[in-house]
Length: 188
Image (cartoon, rainbow, N blue to C red; front, side):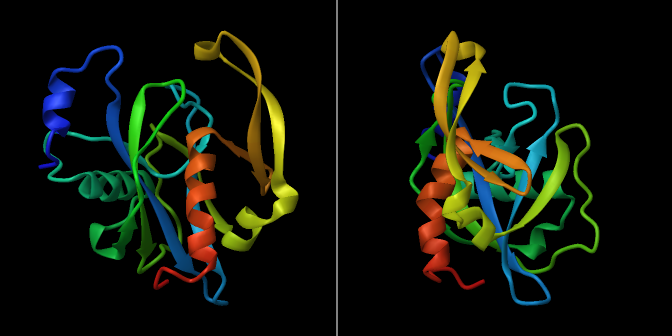
């Protein structure tokens, strides 16, 4: 069990973050292109419609945050746990508006299904994207966004790839991890 996580979950106050974990699932396609798999969340919920890393809330049955990331990835992608390998964990980061503290993990998919089987209640689409496109500086920009918790419009950093806009915590995690991925630090 993750020390302190269960206690925090039980004694949560409005200012105590909700523990969660995500995975940056990497793989190489048949041509050898390095790819990262993201999801588009369904329209409902706090993060509805957003492009995200697979993951979710820590549950008391999860022995570690690493396990949370693997469990959630398998549930959201419809893949077997034996196909997921975790290479490294990154320092936890907090969302700026929805009250989550997220533990990111970089991992690999040993086998990619011929067809993704996303959990329809949570995942609108699975996005299997080339890392080079995610890292392309041409996709970096800003966008005016309204989020209810902000109480108004704000200009936020974004990354556009494949007709999708990535922002928020997912973008901050990618900005931290992509240089390491491109430097070949992970055995994909």
